[in-house]
Image (tube, rainbow, N blue to C red; front, side, top):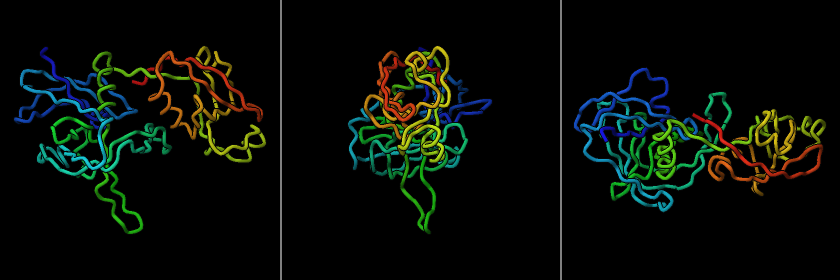
Length: 283
């Protein structure tokens, strides 16, 4: 219709009181947030479609190969350098990078990204990462710019894969939010708990998993018999390393209404139960 949607990063628009979009011909138009998703760092804006003549096609990011050409488009540093294009290759696919979503200094989530050596700088966030055909393969998100052992890290940039972008933005356009499966528990990673406490109080000697800190009443976990201080070690047979791994499994490998087999320890004994995961509003 008369509306055009613009995809960018959540961290680009977060906290903004007013937003505008500069089109490729220099036209400045007001923008409104349709919805955001903190877990994938994506946001959808809407603008008037009066001056929009074309939209970008999405490539299948599952078919991207290491070594393919990648172009990063954006406005590095500020709008004076808008429409900057840098070229590189796809350095890795399905790379896992830890993210601290709530700013507490602990990793909440391991995001799956495309790695590229195309130059990505502050201001490139939310820009397009495209292939030789001009199709979107990802949304530029971040880079590693740390210097360690007197060695500067260069050419390590990351983009959110186009298939994930498509999945998330379609939900944001439809309802302004993303609904994900949940167990209904609060968790803490085993590797953050004192070993003596694990052994003496919880009778657990494993090195990975998550401790159930709280079970909400009436939730899938509660209905399945999971209790406070249970230690979850597997979901559908897959080892659970930490809290981020639980979220990643639920968000990416299950959908609302799925039955998930939870393996857990209670008083030193291994148990299993079936949990029918339900909706969680993660707007």
